[in-house]
Image (cartoon, rainbow, N blue to C red; front, top):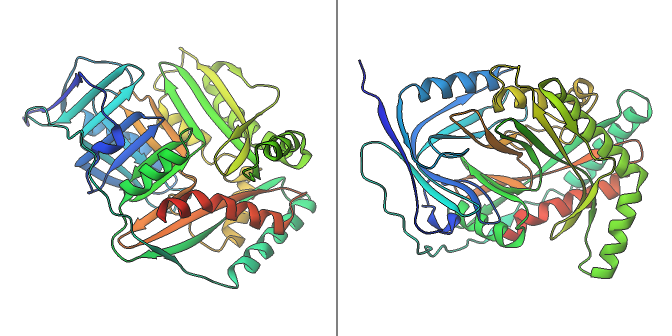
Length: 406
């Protein structure tokens, strides 16, 4: 019989800055306002794809958990062994699962370290390493903007023809650096500039998402829905007026309602009660403002084996990244978007041994490949969308990654 692998979780006596702990090789992160999880080293990793990728991921994770002998003196979700996950938007693309050898977590006044193996507790370096930034040059395709506006107009025509209600269209941009791109530099910049977002890094996909797809904690489900966007000007008085106009915009409120309803409908079968606020609030980020709604629910205790994988399978893709009705929107994306999203707009975050976890939608992000990076932006298209304004909105959504890289 194969001996079980020791997994040890113990409390830390000091609060260390999580992002400063990361090494340069394959850093893993899910951090918001200095709290969350970071990891490094690879105990095990795999990929999944196809229509059953969430179920396949659960099966692999449970098989890995069977090989562990866990000693956990801290308890609570996110302690013990943790799976970092980055799922693809489309079933056809590859999703990546990673179990790190070392995990450091921080939540409220509690900090902890988890490590896999019989070695002694790892020594954590609290001195942030110097990371040199690289200069990124962006490839320019003069026809790309016009082509994307044409796709938006095609979508508007289909919607006005009553073929669907909403579709989300994405575009990308590719940058090349003089040396290998370091995810840690991007994470630090994003964390400083966008403290209310969730900073993530899994298998080269790095970014700062404002949209929490799923938090599952001891039977409570939370999802933050964002849909409806307006750029900020930097003038406080002007931006307050823009926020008020966003909150009254029939086009943006319509787009937002589709996204909220898709999330509420997805989690309702698992819950005894759901709270959906009557109207959204305006979420202020450094570069844009979004209409936002926090949908919450209490899981039904009579349902067995409902975990993060179960709910993700129903939640993804929401109307915020796909459209409404979902099958028609997905078909239109496949027909006219003209690119593979990869893991952009897919669920990204972590899941623990109890099946609890936190996963956001991989937005405001880029995929690193050595000295190049591919960044993404998407916009929700409804009947009242204007291709010129949607192009400007997508450019605003490129800003966080562009500025973090330069």
